[in-house]
Image (cartoon, rainbow, N blue to C red; front, top):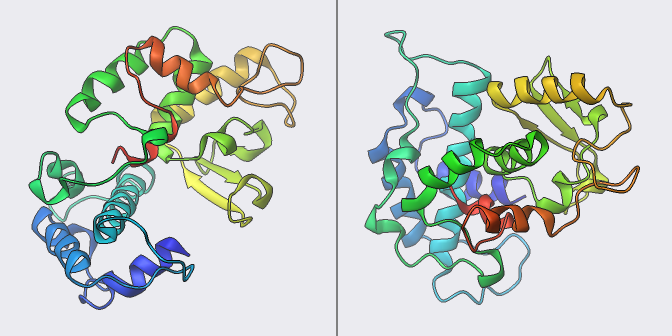
Length: 239
């Protein structure tokens, strides 16, 4: 509902629905975000938005949506520019843009400061425990909720489609959901599966007790060990 509302309320009215992905530049994204700030729409739920500036929150969600579209187009569909070069993700050029100053992040869901994102990613990639490394890299790349990701089973992983297919029972809204997985993480998951030789019903991220999965606090503990006092849920607001 949230993505559909952003599309219908902000993207379509601006005339961008028929744009080629190669036409979506940094300037176009900034124009989209400015339109959101100037034209707030009623929340899908109908509830009153108590944020001091709800337009900033909607703008941040829209930016994240555009980022996910480009990640899928670039890493899964392998789309190219007319000249054959890889497409550029305009959202990656917005770091430090003053337009996004003042975006409220709930204290309990604090995320890495954008200036520390590179250092954070580098530390995650250097984790020696393959499950821990894959968990955080998938969390950052897919923006899955922690409660959903810890319950992923091997039956939900499709290495051919490079997708996770989550049943409705794992989603907050109860609707089945598919999310693309970057190529390097697919390779990592395949290697992990070959190493542990699991049943399809087994959890990907296993706990200490037999048949258990990661606890809700494990991802945050991992991030703290890397030197960052933030939450795994905050990864959802990183990009």
